[in-house]
Length: 283
Image (spheres, rainbow, N blue to C red):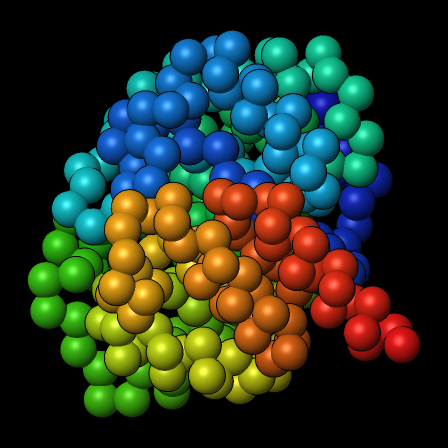
């Protein structure tokens, strides 16, 4: 069991109870939408405050780009990028904000958990690092298991599926079973179909149209469609920052299908969409 601030993990037994917004903080030089914007510590902390102020319940910090064509970032570089951010976050009063670390490295995840994170967002669903899922089980943290065909460097070269919905659903079901077998509580597992990760435009649309099937697996479903290229193709527009409305459309679609967590760059706008949907449902 890790020491330090891991009491926060024990105080939050469930990963998520209600639908919520996950705000993105990329501490990277080459992310597809905001690479380099938050490398400076002051800019990254301003971004943290903005994400919190605009209504996000989860802050997702990533120090390695996973855009198509990107190369892996060594774990020690990731750790150097996130350490000062956690140091500053721990000085702030961000009550009600859970912190997620977006990484495939168990060493990076362990550092983040020691510093107060409670969620690990792993785009490989614990496959790239054999120590990841056992470490999650040992610490009592939560894990987001995502589907990806291939690796970021080559995943968009020629993605192919016989039946994308069936294959993604079966993969996520298998990863859930693996996590459970290693001792991770079902309450601390979320799943992500991996929109844009080894998928064509048609694959993304089929998955979004079939989110209810993925949600039927049980764990909360995470949707990460924010500003992605397929939305730009549909809307015939660029740059990615012009796709706020398109992203909000995927949030509403996901809410109707039972998804719970929406990983977005534009927190305020998607939070508004979520609140209106919630009000309509309550009425």
